[in-house]
Length: 404
Length: 229
Ligand SMILES: Nc1ncnc2c1ncn2[C@@H]1O[C@H](COP(=O)(O)OP(=O)(O)OP(=O)(O)O)[C@@H](O)[C@H]1O
Ligand SMILES: [Mg+2]
Image 1 (cartoon, rainbow over the protein chains, first blue to last red):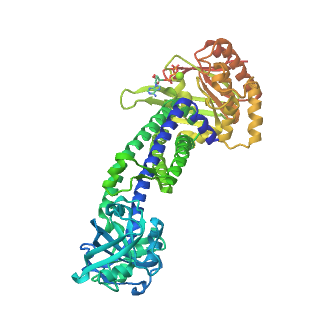
Image 2: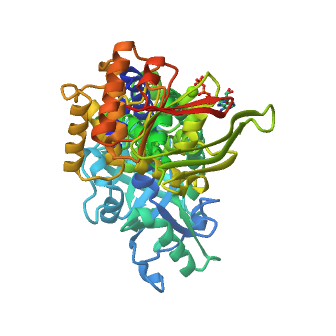
Image 3: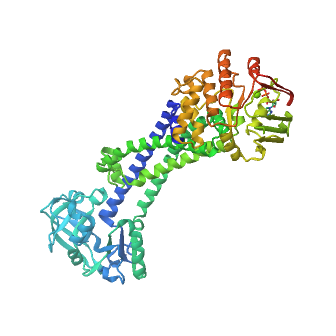
């Protein structure tokens, strides 16, 4: 009965209800799209850095991240080095990261050399799938893969040979000559123009550091729980010898940028929510005020305040629900579509992004929290607004109400 | 045994600022089946008296007994329940819930009382027939004339078989034809259903139909006249 009453009361003033529903609809759509876009773009950026490059966490010799030289390398670690294997840890993947000057007859440019285990690196970052020309490493082969951008700068292609020259472990001179068997495409433009990949053994040999690595990248079964596992590993390793760093600790600028951006958006969202709040509030005030006489009658003939409060709660919730539901239903397909097909930026905007090392792509995410957060906030607003009729009804005096 | 008994009822409004003595010691008794008009000049305290009897407001002094129960000691919630179970109300105008049909308005009281559906239907139809609106059961209040709305209000007031019906100037907004019709109806229900009616009015034609006329002046009963009829 209360629901029927509430529903009909809602449509007493069709136009006002529709306008309010529309206001909620637009705000919820906007806030969902904004959140989805922002979180999606950041998630993609994190993925491009974290899942395709740094991993969620790494182990180094203590001090390596501060001073990334081969002197801060360490002997290869294996999961067996841990006294107790964390359940969530799947693998530890060795890497050597260093620099070298790449040259051929005409050009010489610096490159970041990654010495990797071809099979396990592919499992971690999907390296093989980034091959855009030529092919991936074959087992036991002495060859190099260049990022597309770097190959461009060097004016080299598949089938050519490159000579690397650098400083090895303990100051020895590192030299190597490798056939280019493939080119790699990285979404992140910064990585795309500086990375070169060697099989781990080749890198160890060239840099004169057999059996040593600069980092062990941790691979987790469940990335959402990686923090606990990092803690577990930290406890087990000698903190005087090793550092275990999360991707946030390795990329503080990225974390800062995300925080700054999120903060900025919170302000925008706050304004949107304010609009919703006032929209609902003014409607609810009017719905309460214009029915004063009626509430007075209801109270006089024996309707309890509590039931009237439930009735008005239903009205407010229904009002919000219509707006929220339509907004979510409208935003959902948009979000799903663009999550599937991120928008690639072109022109100046793209180069602007590239300058900051970001992939020039706008992505969306359909993570449930994007919807849930916004819906919950609106519901919270609605409950706050509801306090108005709730309180009016609590203090309602039927004689005075019927007079006015 | 009186259905309603008031003892030395006083009501003073705005006690702290400029006190208004709306009721000045009203003692009266109303028996079951009465058809009583409360009359008197504007400001004499008619509405105030009806509000006290109906448990809508509390007296400053004195008591109201309904079936010998002192309702002045009831809490707010007890009073709401009491009104729902024992008193029917008809106000001057805009009595009805605008979003409910005539039928639903009559049924509403019984819904609040959690009566079974079939009982609600039978009683609501019976009353709507009695007030001559069996054709208008599905109409919303805005689709009814003022007279028809007041008839629905009377039907609603009687729906729960209350001990008595209080009506504060029920005909004030009606033309003479509707006034006569509503009074015919109330009289009929008074006789057929043995419903007790207490109503206030300024209208001489309405006063003429009452069997008992209580006249108030300055918050006091100045005459109490019962006619043969
Ligand atoms: N809520 C109130 N606050 C202050 N004074 C009030 C209030 N209600 C009524 N009064 C005063 O109490 C007195 C009696 O008012 P009441 O409404 O009972 O008169 P009434 O006989 O019903 O008049 P009318 O015929 O105009 O309806 C009047 O002087 C009125 O001004
Ligand atoms: Mg009055």
